[in-house]
Length: 399
Image 1 (cartoon, helix red, strand yellow):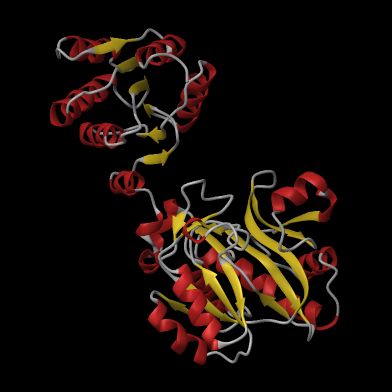
Image 2 (tube, helix red, strand yellow):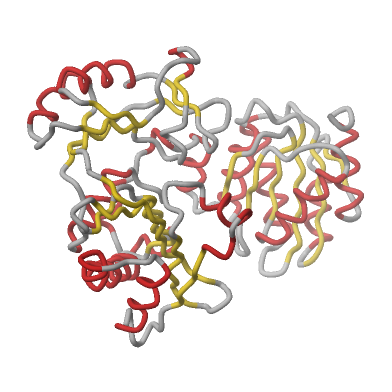
């Protein structure tokens, strides 16, 4: 689950991290009061969407010369003017895709005198199997660009879970960021705080970009991006209220109700598969034959008939879907359960597009018999390669 910047900062502030004063607003009428509650005279008006690159983004309704999604304002009147211009309009960034995202809330924040911009993030490092700090002196930039052009400027420090962030870890991180004086002193407090916040709330990502050194030498979290591990959500019911459904795809919201792993994509072949690895392989082979998957959908290893029915309904609700490929390898999952779920869904919502089904594994004969006797116009496939070729041909070939 992703949350907005203002929510992430409030969370980190609760753990003791240094953040600027700020107020989230949901209408332009709130802008003046929000600005007057801040010290000023410099303010920052920030679009709150679940995507990076906001500062360089463009509002599609405002023309090519419009300012981006993060703006400096040097008066309360300018704050109000920006708020009226930004709220309700669509911001397009590198991470939103061409459709962009509508800005439904802003964060009005007190300005900062910046001396240096740094990069700091925490994530689970698969190489070490530990939570790690990833830091760079090249803050404020896309970390992917830094990794591509100057990878030597990125330093990873894995943290021993038993010891936590030690003094030696702080020194290593501070050295990597070339921190001195007051900023180095602040580092001794900040990095353990960030680690504590990450581990105690089961984050999957905590990104501070930029982490700034101000002109007075102190550190401040200037931006914050937080994602939580959905598998640990049951431990943190208090975080559920931070979820912004307007930022999520409706089909993904529906999938989450049935504990389905679903991600909407831009193609036209809907996929229903069990197992993340098999789902990835299914999408790959669809692309190999020149078409594009419309989704990633993993029903899991032990899905019920009801779960399979819900998955099928979610796929068919996507108007971009021109064909459906069901690819099941039954281990714990039984092929007859998949077949019953597909039939139940088709009877409820109808079948308007070609359907190719490949079943293999536990109770495969029973599953195939159920489909054969259903009277449905189902195209049977012998293996994954055969299934991919058949569904691509059924929708009229590659794009």
